[in-house]
Length: 268
Image 1 (spheres, rainbow, N blue to C red):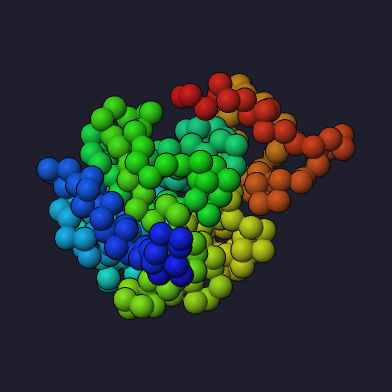
Image 2: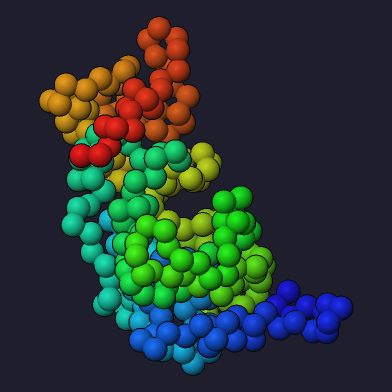
């Protein structure tokens, strides 16, 4: 709940989040990293409620759902106007890296999402409850990759129910995909998506399935041109099938290994 009784009295999470933003507000204002997901919608609205100075930016991934793009353009035109465009699309990046993005090697997140806000104080919707890794995050952090970049996560202790309570209490617009069963909204067929959701997404966005298969074929062609092994993958469809369930077997009965696709091959 957004208001909780503790031994020290009532805690209003909205007031706490706003106070955090006011306390750390930089002279030039915050850089709000906006994905269009429910958490970033709340984080952005809290910046407005706190009265702090900010500018909001959406990082284009080239594989976000069309419904999400429509939502951002309609309800957050400032984020769309300030969107960060990548030099390459996902369909160009995969052949360049010569391997699919996976849970272990998330080069796509690094390329599409982590460059915005360099030298700025960045507001995000990161929450502890989202994952074991994010459970270790702190309210305010210094980026170890980009010099001069800091983060503040004003709703870091909030639960998912807190987020939805805020959205419904303050009538915050959100992407309709949540009402259609999506628990999280991000890149289509993201490796972190559940198998059930992947199956639904493949049915909903079949053109993206074909784009991935064609891209994986170009990836195989690039590997062969560069004299690199492809294990048991012969076509882009082979790669796609493995990528979706990661349980496909090699011809000799062993598991297809990503390495195989060694980490040192991704540095080109």
